[in-house]
Image (cartoon, rainbow, N blue to C red; front, side, top):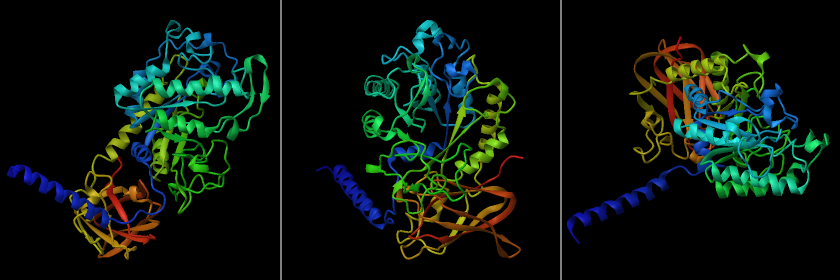
Length: 494
């Protein structure tokens, strides 16, 4: 064998055994851990959900299912402009309501005549789902879909014919023909009064049996393996329990629902779960929270709500209470009947995005030196310097016996900051239960903040800027060795 090939084989073998050693040295997994699709979801942090159906043209919040398709005629609709506003806000994904409870499908489905081809949009040749998917892809924005199980238009709703001949085929079309989806969304609105083909009555169903969500989850996994499934209690993402966009101050990504979770496939429904906002410490399943909130008071556009768009400051407060608590922010956007976002919506999204961009442009912890009370045996692999590299999953770890370590961070010089960012390597589970941050001031340590439930992202927003060149992290409670992966110090613009 030539020398070069022998050298390559030797290096390959050394790398193989090094990986084995590293794996053996790494802390053991703790509790429930995220899947790859959940990790991808966590990294997006913020996305929007867009409501736009004939309900918009009726100036209603929920359509009854009786709207004439002819009213759906957005003459100035431009998917690229909407997506551009979303991207300017710093959002990394868009979920389209392809069919709301009114039953009107925004794509030319074969399952029902009540769809976009019956409207004047694009002279009856339109496919709004495709336009939004294409615009999202072109802008580098992840695309997702919500198709309501409830259908207030369909005459067969509450009967097996609706599920087998309408709803399942709709999901099949959406999951097969619109590219890779980052999420699929299911809410808890199931059954009630509706048009139902002209019967105009109230119909009730048992959501857990009528829809057969086990089958729907299987369909998603078969056709969209990378899509994270949202419903009230998962299986991949849970509802936070309110529509204010706020997770609890202590927010666990793990959950042990009171409702049954057979095979980790819970069914949607308006689940009364006290644990939704904060999750469950040491919960049985990894089901992190999505914090949904509309940009305006309602999920659909209403002209009387002009002037009530959330301000950049309000959006920033929501951001810290959602993304900053290891959840995600799902912001509702709603085009006007013209098909355009209101100028206030566009301007406020842009201003909010600029604040985020400026805040996180400079990490004052870059270039810092570290002094840890303990570093795990493989010191190079688990060194605290991993906290300021570009890898979200490289980390500082301690020996198994050390669960309350301290870390002194010596900054390059004195900096003024008001935002502290911490992250764990959640591939190993959510481990740290509480910690404190101290500032070296007048030759002594002064505590400036405490935090619980770090998880995939914890942002501490201080009441006023701190000037410092030396910071200390104290782990107060952790049942196992820590795996802290990120530390940052940032300043919001004036």
